[in-house]
Length: 216
Image 1 (spheres, rainbow, N blue to C red):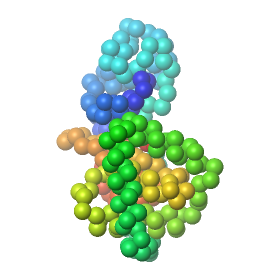
Image 2 (image 1 turned 180 degrees about the horizontal axis):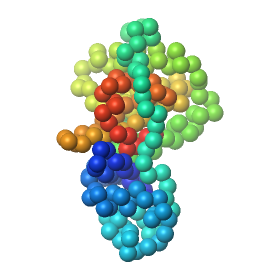
Image 3 (image 1 turned 30 degrees about the vertical axis):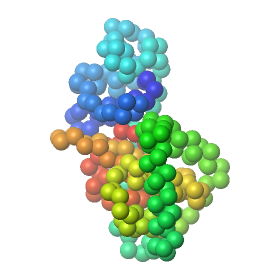
Image 4 (image 1 turned 45 degrees about the vertical axis):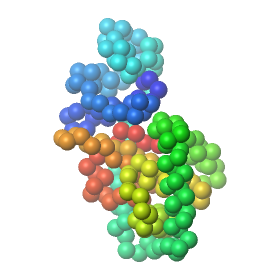
């Protein structure tokens, strides 16, 4: 695969995310099937891959890497749990605001692709010292979401999810996933954060409508 290219099959349609150009587009069934064919992409066959090469979706001579995003299907959400508990709003609101502001600045300066790379690098660096306390993780995520609702800026799934990832990473909770999903008819994309099968900033029924296309 070329750098920044990710795809999934949502329903009967093949959707591509071009992360570097920050755009989604639909592939024809024949091209989508070829892109999904593990064997085909392991051969330097210009006749079979020329259209994908010309579109910049694969690089000549490349070996198949991770093409389709995979993650555990979420079945629960901290937003639906009545016994998670919350931290003090007074202390969390300024921290949530700082995480959100830093995220908006990062998206503006770095762009979409480099922001996701930064999330991945931060997770790698924090893996050895990551905290493992589900109850505290859920409480932090629920508190962040509660605080986010008090902020004046309009809620947007990508910066909100990136801000939550930043907020949690600063507290050494890096064993979480940023998931970008798509659905068709009509097309829409969505983003959320989860750990295992537990959603941290979305409800399970809504997330289930989307097919993951990128997982960090």
